[in-house]
Length: 75
Image (cartoon, rainbow, N blue to C red; front, side, top):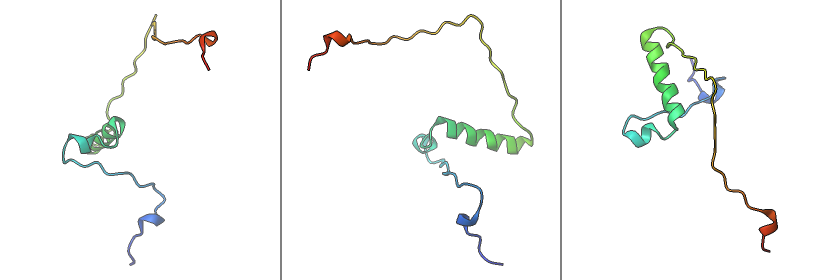
C-alpha cells in the first residue's frame, strides 16, 4: 500500500487552528474558529447542534454617512 498524497485528495485542505494562544486561535478569523469549535462539539455529542432562527418585526436601520457635494470639488 502506497503513501497517501494530500494533493490527490478531492477534499480541499483547510488551515489548522492552533491552540497556543488567543492570537493563533483567531488567526483564521472568528467564523473559522466558530466552525471549528462547532464541528468538534457535534462530533463529541454525536449529533448536530441545535439551530436558532431569529426574526425581526418593525426594524429600523440607520447609518451615518458623509456626502461630498460635487459642486464643491477643487481640482
